[in-house]
Length: 370
Ligand SMILES: Cc1ncc(COP(=O)(O)O)c(C=O)c1O
Image (cartoon, rainbow, N blue to C red):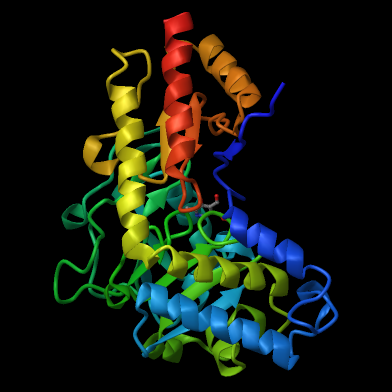
């Protein structure tokens, strides 16, 4: 029996471009004639400093990051940013505005105040309840104050499959800086970085392996970072030491750099936007045209182009779908534990053929059980 092509629909850590993994494989024992692996070289060596430099420059090019923004590759995942943003940017402020539109912004909201008891984490908007988010609260309904330190939101909710398709930006002159968790969509479409005070993203969805967290911060906000904050949690300390305050996640940064090069070779984020829109369109069409066999209840304006959720008519069939699809090479489709159903994560590295294979299987499954 021939093995089916494997398509990895994991929400994260997620699929990486095959060519990137092959290059990493070929360089595993000898990076660029150095005689050793990137994993085993000093983070302060010229070779690694060059890897870091080029990763940053390529990311800058891809996202068109203005020169008044600094780029950091930190550790601690996106979760650490829930607190770092408040510790650093809310210094001297009483209030942070927080938008809850799904699982991750709900967790962020609950965590943000924990090390900053004097800051009110104000619920600026709420899109649903713990298990039922079906639309995103539109920015013009957010209750934000000019006196807040910043407004926090998650642009793509990985668990609930919701996305701000129109990218939020300041909707009045007095708007505090926007702080955005872009973990599960960064580099999937162009964004205007200048619309944000700070962007952060864990690498393990649309960039590279877990372990590196990208932070893009507007320079003037660094003035808010108090020296009382321990250096390892202090954006200014990391910036002042060229991102080398302590040992960064060297290997994930190296792989991220390879992914940035791959993205450039594919035509950059504009090209990604086109293909991502097509992948999502055909998949949602397959759901909507199934006569109700497959369902997705997210409002069309908020359907994620990265994480597509769908259910069959019953829990039993959901389970069967997950099992049978696995044997057909369509891997890790089972939905998040609290959500049930299926979640197809179709990040940049998922080729259109993977989505087409999934759609073919969906049709076949429906014929057998519909
Ligand atoms: C949107 C979003 N934010 C935050 C997180 C948490 O990321 P980490 O596990 O890197 O802390 C995730 C992880 O799935 C996520 O999808």
